[in-house]
Each structure stands twice: as structure tokens, then as C-alpha cells.
Length: 297
Image (cartoon, rainbow, N blue to C red; front, side, top):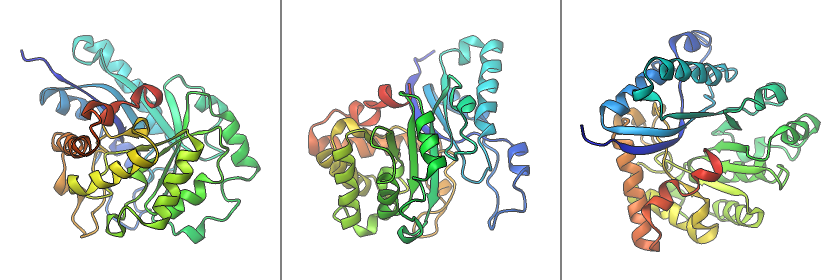
């Protein structure tokens, strides 16, 4: 038997048909297919990939993160039943960053490493100066443990920037999808440059891949990663992620699931890292997972 290729997945979503039934008929679009942990693991392992660390991130269409906690139990049962196949997998989770939901009890779970704010395509002007800095939010930030982080997803760089400026400066932050889903605006978009400047000044802000929501073309995504490297630092990049099951569409309306599956999404991030490495001389492995020890392990 050939040795498996070890990978981490710093951003993936696991949910079942039962989870989807909770929101059936409530969304203005067709629900995605279930994406259970067991199926994901079996696909990777059968393809010769050994997932070592996996981060199950809060799924925005669900009202809470009970699916994240359920996945912890699912893996525990798999490992008990077949330790040879699943025993080396470590699963962590990022739960919903809602002050009423992210209680001390939930944040104290040993596998929870952070909490996620999801804003999707919210315009910057919808983020008031106190939306994420009132009393309940400040109490939530104080509950985060030293190893935990706040995870922000917004398609607009300026939207993310407005959120970031409201977060206490001692809170560790991960910014999704390299900070922008608008590659057409280029790497010199003023809001993007301001976001990178704010991140550098804080010193505890990381930018996470896989980057295909920035652009489905590795060479284009690499331009944004290179900009982050030069502006914030190579130690603030974590590219190795799948964002499975690739929900949504690109800027041309093509479903991401038509571009990617669990195998070629790793090829995508490898290609991005190689482009950046050629430009910066930073090792590919550092770009892919160099920050993982600080964030998802």
C-alpha cells in the first residue's frame, strides 16, 4: 500500500440531511446536498489523502453550530470502530459568533478553536460603528480563550475592515477568502490596502484560503496572496483549505462545485502556493500550512 499524502483542511463544512431539514423552505435558493464527515473522510482516504487536522466551520445557512458539535461525536465513533483508518484525524471546530449562542460552555469545549461572523455580501454602510462593539459583543470577546480566534467572512474588503476595527486589539482574527471576493477590483483597491494595513498594525490577523472565492484562477489568486505576504507577512497566510462542499457560484454564475472537488481543490491551493513561492521565494509548505500550528492545531 502506498503511503498517504498528509493534508490539513483549515476550512470545511459538515452537515447532514437532518441539519438541512431544519432550514427547508426558509432560504431563497436550493439547499445544498448533505456533506457528512464520514463521506468526506472516506473520499479523501480512498483517494490517497490522509487528513490530519480538520476545522469544521460554522455553516451560515444553519441557525446554530450544533452540527459542529455533532461532528465531534461522529469522529469519536469512527475512531472507536476503526482506529487504523481514522485514528490519526484531529477534528476542531469554529462555531457561530453570536453573543447569545457562543456561551462560555460552548467555547469551553476542548475542540472549539474559534467563532465565525458571516456577513456574505453585506455592504460596508450596513455595518454601523457599534454593531460589533456593544455590551453583548464585548462580553463575547472576553469569553474567547487565548488560543481561540474570531473568524470573519465578508465578500467586501471594506465591510471586513469596518468589523475588524470594532474588535478588541488583543483578539486573534482570521479573515476568510484572503479578504476579498472581488478580484476584478485588483490588489490595489483602497479598501483592500487599508484592510492589509490594519492587519499589519494589529499583528494578530491571519488571512486564510483556499482563495477560489477570490478567483478560480490560481495565478490571479496568487497576486492577492503575494500582496498579503508583502504587506502583512508570510507567517500570516494559511492556504490549505477546501471550503468543501464548494457551495455558491463564481462571479460568472458558474457553480464552484463545477470547478472543484475534494481532489482538485488541493491542486488549486498547491498551484496558488507555487505561484507565490516563485515570486517571493517562500517555501510552498509554509504558505500552505505554516500558520496552522498557531490557528487550527
